[in-house]
Image 1 (cartoon, rainbow, N blue to C red):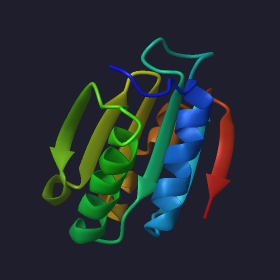
Image 2: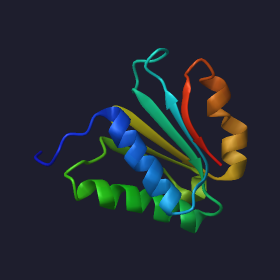
Image 3: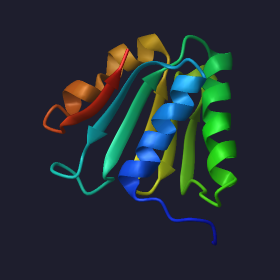
Length: 119
């Protein structure tokens, strides 16, 4: 695959910065290592509208692709209210407000320590 290999913590923090640059809201990074084998970290953020959600997801993929880091999978669409980007050790959840309130991932994964929270 080439490119530099980022540790999951560094990758998650880079994704946090990319989301913040696109004005994502209520960004959280959860350390899921103690409670799950799915990923090392979840990055969860809220977008104000479909256009912003698409812009955030596209920018994450574009910027990481420059470093030869490709997602294992992408699920959801902006109009569904949830996009999931799977970067193996890091899973990114982008929500609209209503969908985030409905699924309450932070509550579901409350035993996972919050590493970073950006309002």
